[in-house]
Amino acid sequence: MDNSGEWFVIVNPNAGRRKGEKDWLEIAALLNNAGLRFTNVFTEHPNHAMKLARKYIEAGFKKIIVVGGDGTLNEVVNGVFTQKKYPTSEITLAMISVGTGNDWGRSFGIPPGYKEAIDVIVKGNCKLQDVGRVSYTYKDLVKQRHFINMAGLGFDAMVAKRTNKVKEQGKSGPFSYLISLFTSLISYNDSKVKIKVDQEVFNAHVFTMSVAICKFNGGGMMQAPNAIPDDGLFDVTVITRLSRFLVIRSVKKLYDGSFLSMPQVKTFRGEKVEVESDPPMFLETDGESLGHTPMTFEVVPLSISVVSGN
Image 1 (tube, rainbow, N blue to C red):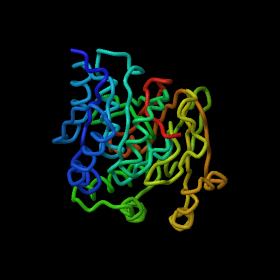
Image 2: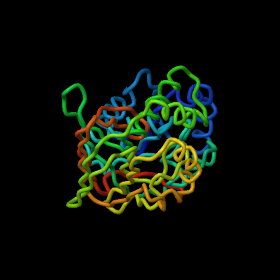
Image 3: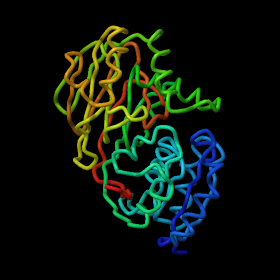
């Protein structure tokens, strides 16, 4: 059965404090008015979007619209990379954001308004972008995950974990990341880390670090201002040990990217990143909490097609 001309729409009803559920009829009407043929399914549990993407691609769908947030998009990307029917670059992803962060969409000019986001889908300007693949440790097992936007280690991963707990309680909002950031500062300690980016080795006490395909995370923080999604390279940002007071004072600089000029910040660019640490540093990819070091990141260049508003 050839479904390649029809869109498969994966709806996360819990995204954006249940906006996915509340606004779906409005979004469906807009999709119909735009003349888009589609089949839709609601997710029912964590990682369901990954299974749905895999199942429906193997049934012949090659175009997927994600109605959700960055976490739902991450699951769908992992579904794309675990299906066996088509090369990943033949699958096209589009986004209608109902989440709280919407960081991936900022890099690709995806408007927050539903009608405007659907207008972008109708125009159909597609670009190939890189995807990151990370091997990490979870309960003494080596696991693997793909990501489309950014991975965070250390403090960033702790903040993501706290933010996700708040989301599970249905209390998320635009300030939930900032609140989690300030509460995490009280208990967080840095790690002694060895980072290898291609052939360059860097040893330091690291507060937080990110491995980026795109520019934004944490609801609009520009943690990798120079990242280019299709250059075949990660942009790695490492923030070494710094005082809690300096973290609080520097939050504003994270939003405009000017924090890169701080002496505690080091940047690297490369295709492969290896990280070892003591104690272990935890990991999040696209806001989803995973395992810990040791871990290895590799770029999968130009490996997925995305609908872009740029």
